[in-house]
Every structure is written in structure tokens, then in C-alpha cells.
Image (cartoon, rainbow, N blue to C red; front, side, top):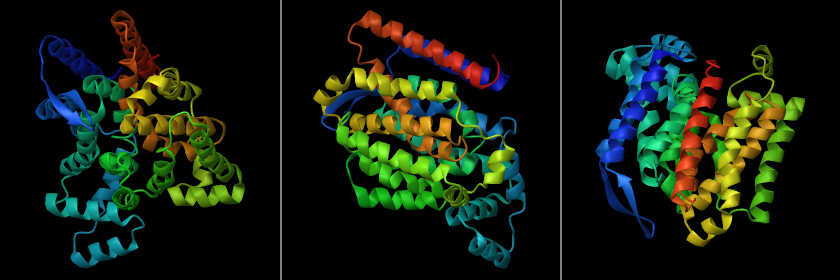
Length: 359
């Protein structure tokens, strides 16, 4: 395991010990319930090492190409205006030009700006909805989100984070506001448009046959698109990749182990479905349906295209990081709950070692 990743796990471990013996929570109102949540400043402090990892950690993955493109951003007004007009994703282009102008082309400031757009919505929404914010951060690291997205798919993860910021509106069915935010996210990465139909079907009653049929319909449509040569090429162009690139990178579908891991929250939600229904928590209902979407898309990504179909999974999969801690707390017997939590921590650590190539 690389040193920077080891330090992140060490940080979470040390903070888990400290927070076990101290109380840095406060009572807040969430919907019609009273919940205990970490104080906002602590939530920020806990996330800071992840931000530092993205900002001052070694350059890796797609960060090389993003920095190379950043260096080539024009500095004169006329050239910058042309750059904006020619850009396909206007939001991303405007962001780049703005940061380049303000920071005078400083690359560290550029990485910081991206990391903040990635992180701030996650901090706010993780803290708001997760019953165990620290466990959610652990899952974020062990699930490789800091590697796979904060240093790799930077532009798409900006779209994801923007949509995550709209979570309260999506949960409360404020569709006009939510759609506007999704459209804004689409100016950074066009795959964000995928969340418009998903937002609607995720409002259905959990484990209801009508909801499941709608979810299957959306995933089946994606399957048809990714298995039809002509539609596949059009879809590849939409998300910014070509079929040639997919073949060159050896796109043989999503990893089955990753699919299995993504299915755990969905399986637990089925186990506790009657309890979840009784609690009538709109947010958890929404997250459960998103988890079903995640698994359905993961299965199709496994048998079709890990690059094409798999690119949409992150939009819904990020909510599993909130849902899983909630479901683990659903085990009412304290001893059982502790065992399950320890098993979750251990298995996710093994999964990280596997995904990072350490095992």
C-alpha cells in the first residue's frame, strides 16, 4: 500500500479511537426526526486529509492530462473567449478559465479548486444524512473514491458532487430546482443528464414491483444502447469516449467483485425492508432505490461495458456510502451490530487492498 493511502487509513483509525471516548455530536432536526450528528467544524476537519491527498499528493491517473490541458489555457481575453465558445462542456471550460485567471496559472491552486468542488457537497450531505459520518468517510476511502475519482475522473466527479449538493431537493421532490442543478452539472460532464430519469424512478416505494420495473426498464434501455453498434457509437460520443478507445483500454466490463460489493447495501435493504417502510424516511427510501439502480447498472456494466455503462454508476453509487451505515445500525442487538460493523470495516479494507493491487 502506498504511504499516502496508509496515512488516510491511519487518520480514520486514530480519529475513531478519539471520538469513541469523546462526544463531538449535537442534536439536529432531520425531517420529522431528532438525530445526532457531528459538529460541522469536526466534519470538515475529518475530511481535510482527503482534500490534501487530492491537492498535494503525487500526480497520478488522469491528473496528468488535466494539468497538461490547464497549462494550455489561453491567457488573453480574445483567446479565452474563443476557448469558451469552442468548448463542449461550457461549465467546465468556464471553471478552468476562471481558476487560471485568478490563480495566474498556479497548478496547486487549480487542484485545490477542483478538490473543494468535489469535497464541500460531500461533507455537507454525508454529515446531514449519514448516521455514522466517520464510517461513511472510511467507506469513501476504502471504496477507492479518492483514487478513482478525486485523482482520476475529475471532471465527471465534479458533476457528481454538484448533483450530490441537490440531494435535499431531490429527496423533497423539488423537481424544478433539482433539474436545474442537474443541467448545471451536465455543463461539466454530459453523463449527468442520466440522473434526471433516475431521480424520478427513485421516488417510488422501496421494493415495490412498479419501482423495480421502472428501474429494470432504465437499465434495459442502457443495455440496448451499449450492445447496439450504432447506438453504442452515439452513446460513446455523448459521454466523451470512442469505441476505439474502449477497445484500446481493454474494456471487458466491470469487475465482478466490485459488483458484489455494490450489492451489499441493496441486499441489506431487502432484509430490513419492512423496518425501513415503517420509518417512512424519505431520504432512506430514495437512497435504497438508488442502490437498486446502482446494482442493476453494475450488472449491465459487468456484461457489457465497464467504461461506457460503468460511467453512470458513480452518480448513484456514492449514496451507498450513506445507506450502508444506516443499514448496519438497523441490527437491533448491540453485540450483533458491533460484529457486523467490524466485519464491514475489515472486508472493505481487504477490498481496498485488492482493488489497489496490494493483494
